[in-house]
Amino acid sequence: MNDPITDKRLHLFRAESNSEFLNSFDLERAQHIDWALVAIFYTALHYVDSFLSVNGHVEIKGGHLKRNDLVHEKLNAIAELYMQLYWSGRSARYDVNYMPSLQYVKTCKNTILPQIKDYILRHLD
Image 1: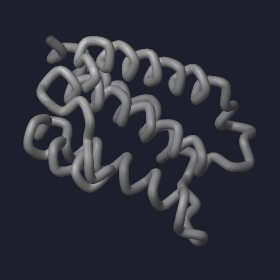
Image 2: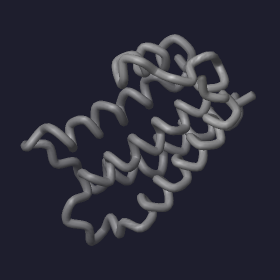
Image 3: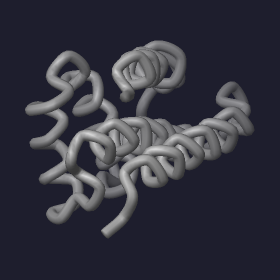
Image 4: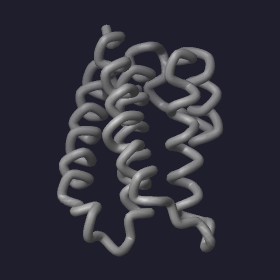
C-alpha cells in the first residue's frame, strides 16, 4: 500500500510540474489552445488527488468516474469547478468539434484552476 503523505507530495509535485508546462504555452499565439484545457484539468486532478490521498483514498480504483464521485462527496465546495474542467478537458480530447475560445481557456487557467488549488492547499492536512 502507498504512503498517503508520500502520495500527497508526489501529487503536489505533479500539479506544479503540469502548471509549469501550462505556463509555457503562449495562449495568445498557440494554435491548439484546446490542449491547454487538458493541462489545466490534469493540474487540478493532481491537486484533488493530493487531498484525497491523505483522506483515505490513496489509490482510486474506478478512474475518473470514481474520482468525480469522491470530489462531490469530499470536496463539494469545488465540485462544480472541478467538473467544469473535467468536461472541458474531456471535450478537448475526444470531441472533434470542440474549440474553446481564448477567453474561456484564460478563465479556466486564471480563475477556475487557482480557486481549486487554493481550496485544496487550505484544506490539506
